[in-house]
Amino acid sequence: MQIDGSGRVHLVQSMPVLRPDEQVLQMMLDGWRNQQLSRNLQFATIEQRLRCVHRFIDHVNEDPWNWTPAIVEEFSADLRTVKHVSHSTLRGYHSALRAFTSYISNPDYGWDRICEKYFGTHPAQVFFDWNTAPHVQEYDGRPSKRPYTREELVALFDHADDEVERIGASGRKGWHAAYRDAVMMKIAYGYGLRFNEVRRLQTVDLARNPHAREFGAFGVCKVRFGKAKRASPPKPRSVLTVWHWTPGIFEDWLANGRGAPDSLDLFTTERGYLVGESTMNRRLTRYCKELGFPDGLDFHSFRRSYATHLLEDGWDPRFVQYQMGHEHAATTGIYQFVSDDFRRSTLRDALDRTVTEAMQRRIEDGTS
Image (cartoon, rainbow, N blue to C red; front, side, top):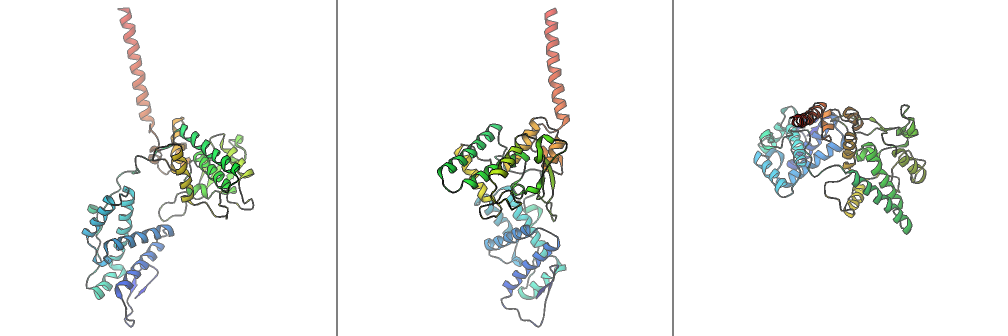
């Protein structure tokens, strides 16, 4: 058997097949990988999907040409009742496995003929709308996930700064890492950035804003590794500086903290690598526990706080949408307690009318 670049299988009659079940499975996975590469999907996405297939096979202990809807439902039940996965995780499993079975059951790729020859059966699609988790709303995150309050942010940033001073005064290693992580937290909130967007920032991504000269050399933050759409490269955007304290964070870090002045990267480890998300999460989780914060606050909560606080302060929702890099206003609306002009104006009119009517009644009662 041979796999071409588009994922099609070809049977070479002159070559004997030893252990056909293992070989066919591996070639299915290789062919599906080729198909996804042809679709221009990211390597990380492809590898994650392949891991989902391997986990499913290990759980059900059945080869793909023997899968049935009942096996799917048993697997899903185990994920929900035993592993207690989130809605989005379950849907991610279903999406990956459904794509794989669509590939192997498509007659254009030839796996039906291979399986009939060696196993007397053929693969079929077993992931349907009626036994998989649907995506029916814009936001399906856990309700416990929320933005930091302004008081929590002040407490968290003060605690992070205190840790830098404490470690520095003790003479132990870790002062630079604590300082770096504190700066990354503040920048994530200051510009509403995701973790990957922060960790990949470089000095060349900071520029002046001619319309806001008071921010000096830090009026614009160019995000070059924004969240990508499916089968697309990272989506860039420019985030304008809006708070007067953010330039000082950059100035202090560039002058006193950045350990590799010959590198363009802003945030690296002592060995020169980009900071890993798990490293940051461990520190942030510890800080939140030490401060007694409730569950549901994480690194992405800085981004939630940025949008929420701008909207609470009366910034135009469209401006906030552009700053966040959201394609649709409905996505920004997730962070907005009052979501549109119609609702605001309706509420204001009703309140004003109520006050006017009450004042009119008092006047009438006084005259009578």
